[in-house]
Length: 176
Image (cartoon, rainbow, N blue to C red):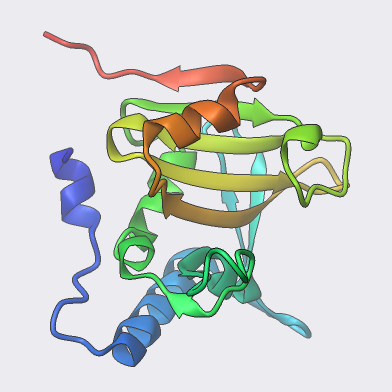
């Protein structure tokens, strides 16, 4: 693992799932939200190319939970995922372009089951870690943070997602 990424991991060892969830939630709120609204907390951040991303407090559950029963309830979000949670500090640096060996892709709506717009989603990929960060388009032209996770099915899963997408940015580390 990249030493910069390793230093950003949130240590959840020795915590119950409930404690780990609370620690992760507090870290997400601290890192990505800084305004209170009538609907909850939000925060504005920037992508590698200066585009605005809004983080909503209520995306926490979607980003850090998965389905406990993937076959019968594949879209449920009822199981806290420590491997997602420990990487909460990776999201900002990846979308801001501060982590080497990342890519940003445009993934078009027909490839995504839940897209309600004709605009492509953004997918940031850290291939070595099989880590994905999804941003969805807003009507205003900016983005909203959707989710971030390790692709459990590996690089083949990522290749399937990107098959008809377009990679428009790479942050490569020089190999000396």
